[in-house]
Amino acid sequence: MPWSIFLSGNHDKWLSSRQRALKKAGRAGRRPRLRADDLRRIERGLTRGPQALGYETSLWTSWRVAHLIEEECGVRYHASQAWRILRRLGWSCQRPAGRALERDEEKIRLWKQKRWPEIKKKPGKKAVPSSSSTKVD
Image (tube, rainbow, N blue to C red; front, side, top):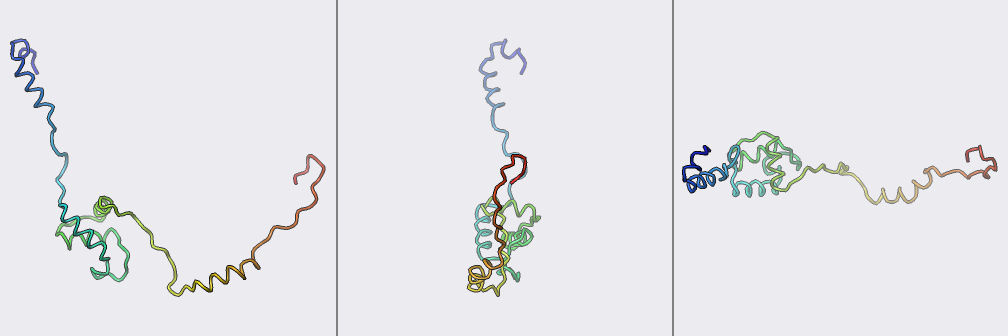
């Protein structure tokens, strides 16, 4: 701002130009392609599970989430961007517990109670401590 405005008595003009300069520049970057109702549709699709899209397992991957977004909203995202949308919705990365379908909890409990104590290594009896100060006990 040139000093001539201030010196020529146009103080009000100078003040108003400062106010315009302090206004927000607006949003940086692109506008989001998904609206709030799109995010709600995505969340409903996530709760239905990936099997509703025709996948065999109930495991969500970022590629499957990207497919869901495209199916529900018509917007194509890369898997890495789909992960960002998941975080925005409050979803986190989870690993499924790898347990066999044939697992028998009762047999496991019995094994832990009876067999494990039999095969578990037990500490040996300690020898009488030495009176020597240089010998390690």
